[in-house]
Image (cartoon, rainbow, N blue to C red):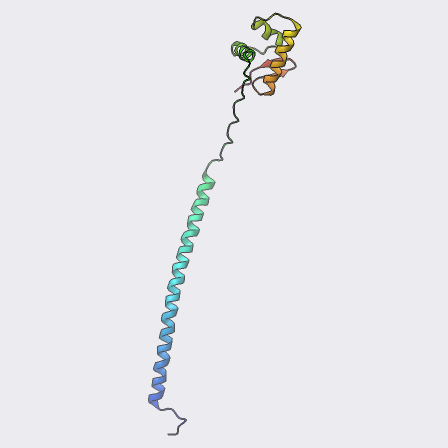
Length: 140
């Protein structure tokens, strides 16, 4: 045999080396597959949690907007008296009728002052003016 020829033993040794290299590569690839499988499992779990959260959120009822704060009645006692009149009234009233119910003298000055107060209460949403000069409490 010449120096360029391989002996059967050398070929077998080379094949054994190659099998060892392939086994090492296979082992590294298996470890990489295990890591990627674990990562894929984690990603699947996270995606499922997001799907469940989305489904839960879609099943929730739409939140109702917060109720607006109740209108604040002015501090002046005349407003308290006017509201007391409307609390017992069974129909809409005009400024003159409110004056009568409050036992005020039916004078233009008194009627105009009450009308202004009724308008102010309407502006605040405490009363409503259902037609020109006719006031009542809003319906709940």
